[in-house]
Amino acid sequence: MTRTEPAQEAERLMAEIAAGREAALARLMGLLGRDIAMFAGRYLGNRADGEEIAQETFLRVWRMAGRYDPARAKVATWIYRITVNLCIDRQRRNRFWRIFGREQAADWADVLADPAPDATAVAAGRQMLARVRAGIATLPERQRMAIMLCAVGGLQTGEIAQAMGVSAGAVEQLLVRARRTLRKDVGDDDAG
Figure (spheres, rainbow, N blue to C red):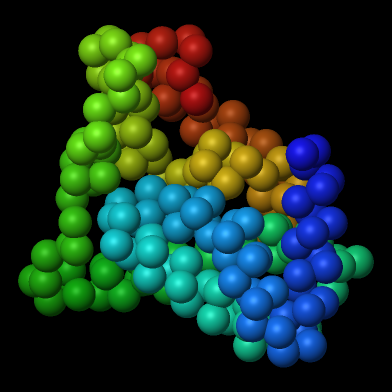
């Protein structure tokens, strides 16, 4: 399946969702839900938060489907924009609670430590991945969001720009800075 086939299917599903067909929402969640949850979970540093954000994202898709305009953005880009906004809101709430002494829901180490070992991965590869993920966790918020939308979401520069509400040039600069920082922190020119 080419990249345009899922995009065309997603657009068709959005029209069905706007018409009130719940089955179309379920199919759209099957098409994009895993990636949305993975992006949100990794961005927020907590898998459970990522799953909650994905659920809230698709609730908003259901409620706002009639507002979707295919001339302005692809379905995936529009949905990632909703997800980005929800992630930002969640981060703000988490910061507020931390100020008052409430611990963050999970430590990055919980997300980074994969409980299901990959049989084909060697120890050095896992260590490099852990260093890259730890490096991503320390990036400034906008750089982290851009690199995660690129790496986890698979979005192109223009799509990231739309999702983040910034120019494509700003996204390119964020990605360049993020990759430079990761290369320096990880100590490998192939990082990022």
